[in-house]
Image: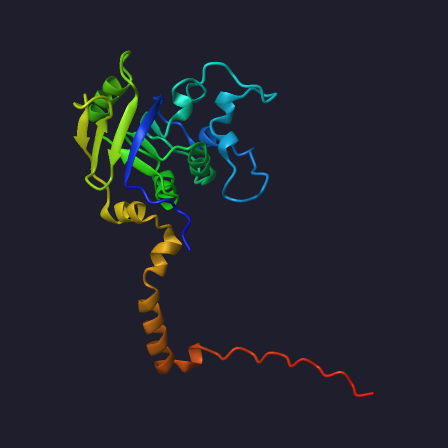
Length: 226
């Protein structure tokens, strides 16, 4: 059973973190471990080296600790975001903080795949459009609110009746369907459950030796009669 939240439309605050080559160890340092040893509970790990000092005290001025960006659901970053290791905790930390989409000119390939598996949209824009978005969303009088519509593949600023920036975007159709339907790899596989069952039934007839019978269950022993 999948636990990924479907993604159709998203409207909310976008936070700017426009450095290039932010790697997965910066997103979620490897020293952090969830207390529950699960794939949840990583909010405090997000950019921990930038947000907190060695004693755990909050550093002043980090963007996600400022108003209005502490309520961000979208992160706008520089190129090659999520490069480095294959650490999936980088995506879990973004998700647990409340980030549902990351917009960048490019992404680390494994990070991009991990986003899709966890219901986050990695939205790649050409550099020129990315610059236009940054100028429109983070100008002094702008609200930093964006709207992403994955049904129509449109991205706009969400201020007033006439957006100051609007563009279409492209995404691999399989990835788009994954997000729209809230499917992780297990959920995708389960969509084919009937096909898999039919194959196994047919294959069992042709190759019965490939399906050994399970060992018999041990019989419960009887207590000796008095």
